[in-house]
Length: 457
Image (cartoon, rainbow, N blue to C red; front, side, top):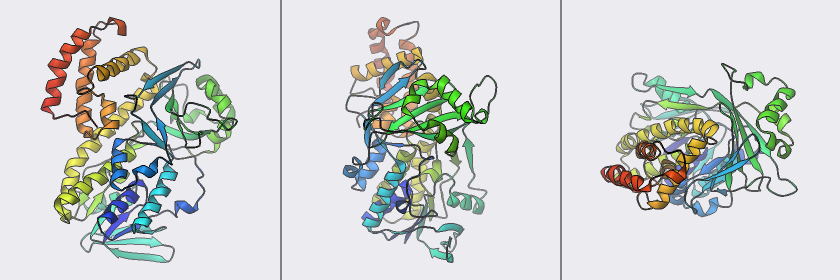
């Protein structure tokens, strides 16, 4: 029997994929059934489904159904303090991300897991593991329940009980910790205005303000889920921080100074900001994801990351498709499967964790910078000029299945090339495309050949 701890997004998808391969699957979830609860909101950043997430859904036979939950997003809309708007497309005209509610997607995947034949037990909290007996002990409303397993997957999120238990059992092999971001977040809402969407629904809206920012993603009904990010504590030259916002007057001052164009569209922002929980963000690092030839961490339990590349769930779904391909390769040789899973996927998760932190700085600070926008314009021009060989780092991560670690490496090489193209060049009109051609021939083509990089999805 395959046991999965956690009925979140990754655990539920993995249950579907395993059932399609004929395995008996049992899922234990600490929470009560989210399908029986009203979605209260306040602590769930909207997700984007990109190529890796879609690949997982396709393998599960669910990709056609996701459109009923999602909104297509084609680029960023930057909001300045003066209300000026600048649109930055993500990639080619047809390339887009899908914005979806985490809660709705979770409910959908739980339904599909049960439909596929997985048994799901809610309000079962993992208490202990005995890896020699392959036994897990869960706390329930009736006491405790002991369960034997063939293989156990920890899909129980960033605060994973499975991860903490195996780190305790194998302290010389497994070390885990969380690097907390210096900023926290609040979820807010922007409702429909007279039945219509208040902003363009096909864009991720960003209000970049240096050490803090606000962003918005559309829901399926045209309303928006907003997320405000601010430093936890005021320090140095920082003017705004959660520690400084003690009253509704403080919150009002923040919005009037930093996000004035959003105020008319957010009628409940004062009460929501005051009442909604303050969420934390961190990067989970774990030295090993597998142990005892029978336990593996997947999704956020192995590698929770900050949300600024929109890849947390997508990376978790890639864990599932990586395991699936190894299952197809090795049959039921689980020790070999788990060993190869960690060896191949961990470097990619480490890479996207680092890039997500870089994107935090980019989104809060750089997206409105003139020089940054010039670099993005050059990057887009190179994609159009060399469509068969050049794709931006963002495009490689979001619209292909190129391994994250290779995309990270490619991004560094692209940065070198763009630096040289723009060396001493003040504007886009003054770029020497002959020089760009030469750099592509001399630096980029050898790089993609050496690394077997294919830019097509």
